Image (cartoon, rainbow, N blue to C red; front, side, top):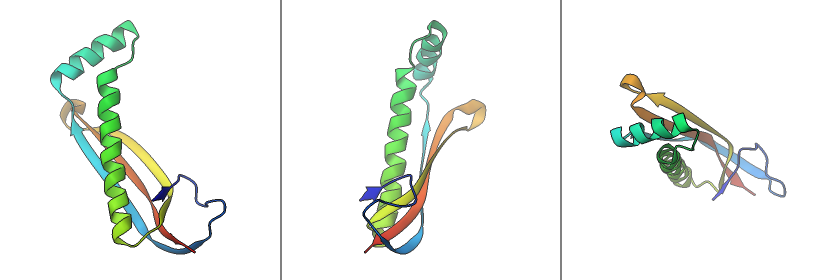
Length: 106
């Protein structure tokens, strides 16, 4: 399925706008990953555990959004927006939300 953050796709004409589709993923952060992430932030390195968790959450959210678009009979999703938020008590969870418009191409 074609996915893009733009509202148009070069060389393709949109026949129908089907609906807005959304995918969300909320992942809890492991306490040990939090500790090691904080240490790496202090010494200036990259927080690999956080990066992996964000990547996993993003993948889950995209898969959910794409599944909803397929159920509508879409060929693609345009205008995709990706949002990241820290949620929960003391920021203990991470949420990734992706949304876009499911479309049918000619």
